[in-house]
Amino acid sequence: MNQLSDDVAALGRRGLPREQFFAGVADRLRRVFEYDASCWHTLDPQTRLITSDAREELVSSGVYTPDTIQAASAAIVASEYFVSDVNTFAGLAARRVPVGILSQATKGRPERSARYNAVLAPSDIPFEMRAAFVSRGRVWGAVHLARRGNSADFTAEDATALATVTAAIADGLRTTLRLDAAREARAAGAPGMVILGPGDEIEMITPPARELLGAMHPRTSSEEMPPTAVLALAAFARANAGSAHHDADAVVVPTSSGWITLHASLPDGATNGRVAIVLERAVSRQATAVRLEAHGVTPREREIATLLARGLTNPEISEALVLSPYTVQDHIKNLFEKTGVASRQELVARIFLDDYMPHLAQPAPLTSNGGLA
Image 1: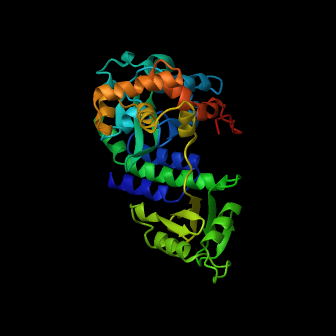
Image 2: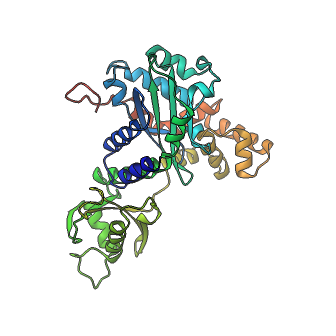
Image 3: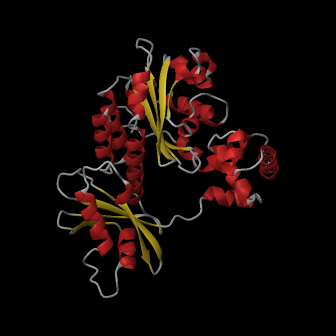
């Protein structure tokens, strides 16, 4: 198991594009236990809502076709947010061990699961194992692993193996998402990325990175040389290429125009000394907070709305916020009245899912071999 964890951690430090990272993790998991297909997701750390999915294997393995995958994806979203079900990603993210096997959660009666009835059983998938990828209390993604009818169910040993790498996958996904954002940056205020060669020469730099590096330069220094903080972080990343710890791979730098956070990764592994550094300013308030404020929701009610979206029950919210159950219920009642909804599922859909559903509804592009890109 230590080898699997080390391999996944090393893969995560490379900052690969999201699809490549997921494929690499899938390959490493299959060295430990078998499964027929997988579907990988990114989740918003604040709300624990699905923000993207990588479902190529569900098509390439023959479980679904490009024509049927959309309906299956919609049913998965429904089982996560609109009906009560077992082993939801938000629910798994709240557990000490964020891994769940369907047969165990339903006590051997999978038909108790709405997801099983709507998605798995019609596709000849009697066996399912899921995991959420959590690091330092924040969830960054999740996975659904499937075994078809001619296979055996997942075992406790399989779940243990997957549990040993959930944090490493979360850390790698966090690195990947930062680099993906910088690679695709177009708008003002977007993250920037600079790639340094083995001798700290700048091999590539995006326009946002050029602006952020300029803000970090002392007036007396040459802008041809990266700032000291960038050089120091690059040196640290190279020296600790084999470490499993990610905490020191990021630093926060004060500038006259605000704080700038730097995140380092090694795109080629520990092989040739190249370092990719993502630069970003402090994140502004999320659109969800603005939307709630537009409904006249108070800061405390906003906090409770976020916990509801994460799947917490009323007693769990009461404990987390040190409030009486009656106070929590009053806040939820006020939330429903102000936003014009009648249930927590409707609240999540009205306030939180508007940002994500349009993306999930878009069909994934087809590759040249007929699979999903």
